[in-house]
Length: 295
Image (tube, rainbow, N blue to C red; front, side):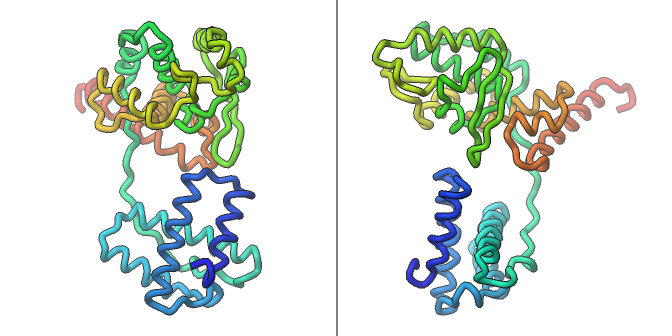
């Protein structure tokens, strides 16, 4: 593949070293592009990048549709190709991108799943955690997830130096830094948590550590978050990202400014944040139905 399409590796290097995309994102881009070029190789004898037209792309999309790939997956692959050809424009390899006439399939809008405020309150004030390092770590992780709306990757990579007396500095996607306020009581607990580390652990930069003094791993966090959420809610999805959705939805439901929520979440586009306004509208409809005598 790299022999026939050296542009693929050059593009991935651009994403890795210049855009500084995460490993997970890079794998997604690489998978999509390798599938595309493998298709071109098998069906059209590997045409050079500069000769690829919309016809080739539509042919690939049609095959995926026949294979019953979801609209969401197809849209992601179209987005990958748009980025790839945009980079080829930038390098001067092509004069015009074939993606200008490619239309992504319509997606059914799904509202973000979130945990009700009363259930979050139940989780943080009534659920019992073990009175040891493990229990404290899990409780503080849950509290910080909900207090800040951080992504899982952001929280487990959080360093002690990023915590201030009133806020936390978060390094998000594309190494973009944002500042999120943290309740004073939670900051005090986190600072005490840091002070109580074992002497051998004081040189470790990560804020959260296991009872064995190791940085938290995603699988472990997924496990205990799912377990605790199962105790308070019946929502189907029980993951750290649901706490992020809950953070944003509850802010919107209580009158927070959309742009402020966008900054807190670290979204690059307001469109990504606007999905939470739909939950707010749904809540208003529910209130109206319950309260209005003619509803």
